[in-house]
Amino acid sequence: MKDGIANNSTASISQARKAVEQLKMEACMDRIKVSKAAADLMAYCEAHIREDPLIVPVPASENPFREKKFFCTIL
Amino acid sequence: RKYMRSPPTPEMATQEVPLNETLAHLKTESETLKSKLEEERAKLHDVELHQVAEKVEGLGQFVMKTRRTLKGHGNKVLCMDWCKDKRRIVSSSQDGKVIVWDAFTTNKEHAVTMPCTWVMACAYAPSGCAVACGGLDNKCSVYPLSLDKNENLAAKKKSVAMHTNYLSACSFTNSDMQILTSSGDGTCALWDVESGQLLQSFHGHAADVLCLDLAPSETGNTFVSGGCDKKANVWDMRSGQCIQSFETHESDINSVRYYPSGDAFASGSDDATCRLYDLRADREVAIYSKDSIIFGVSSVDFSLSGRLLFGGYNDYTINVWDVLKGTRVSILFGHENRVSTLRVSPDGTAFCTGSWDHTLRIWA
Image 1: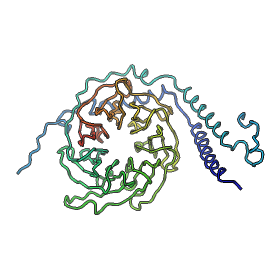
Image 2 (image 1 turned 90 degrees about the horizontal axis):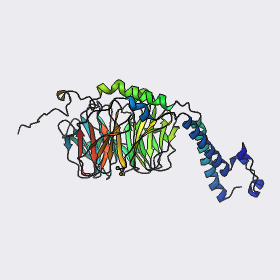
Image 3 (image 1 turned 180 degrees about the vertical axis):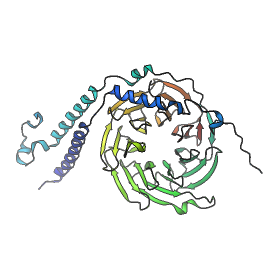
């Protein structure tokens, strides 16, 4: 029925159809405004910033990487 | 339905192909849908993140420096991952070696030689009892870590994933039982570790997939991947469906990482920028770039609160960005070649970088 050239376009058509279905699905998404998204990102930062050891450093004695410890091996 | 009304060509008249099924019509429909998508996204673009963040307090001066240097690899370090115990690290290298380190003492605890060079991916199991790795062998293998330092780790190796091109990244899910992989073959896949069975595959990238990151467990079963097609895709792990796609980078995406709340993710690209995409607004909301930064970003990660974004660059530096304000707050020097991998520790007290200079550094 369909020759070799038609089979090639069958594959392309199938791919194009998948792309259309994917886009239709993505179009259905419920989106929020950037202002709301931004506010939520900021709120999360604010809520956790005090526990962020790279921003509010814990005392050196509590950060194993910052404390000056000397490791000795007994020979 | 204007696009269905074009005059029939002689071919279409003789073949029984419905008008709306031809390639040309599908492509037109694709373009129309893409424009509609952009329109919908644009309607909600009422403000920029950095504008909203103007009222946020600025960050102070940063004193971050190298606290440990891990030496032992014989060639470029390509990947690293932290253990949940916040002190152990696994790293992999171009020379085929995978090393487990105690980052506090810098001691090497385990070493295994892979049968291939360019071990581009490695990951620590959640239990801390195993590591996964792979690269040019197109596989992802799991090595249980023995308490006996003399035991040959390679003997207990389990082959889990099989791709048809290189393994670019791997990650355990929230247990030791499943592994997620990405590959140069353009796909991602989810595997059962015990049986090696393929549980789900993820098709949609048009070229090599270079990176992936799992959503924080509270936000459900999704993950994000980035590839050479300049796209970042968000996937539903159960259905295999691509649920969101972002295409704003101008070159390969080398790294993707979720914001700690799970509502956004950052990406790093060969186009020398890092970007932030908000999942609920369904768009890019920030670009982290400077005219003076012209080398690609290999790896990105957030600090614990999400306020800082660390980027490892091909110009040997680490740039630290204020995620909300979009400004650079620090630049860190130390490595003597490209930074290839970067991860913040599980409790956020430090971050680790791996480099083509054969070393890893712990910064705090």
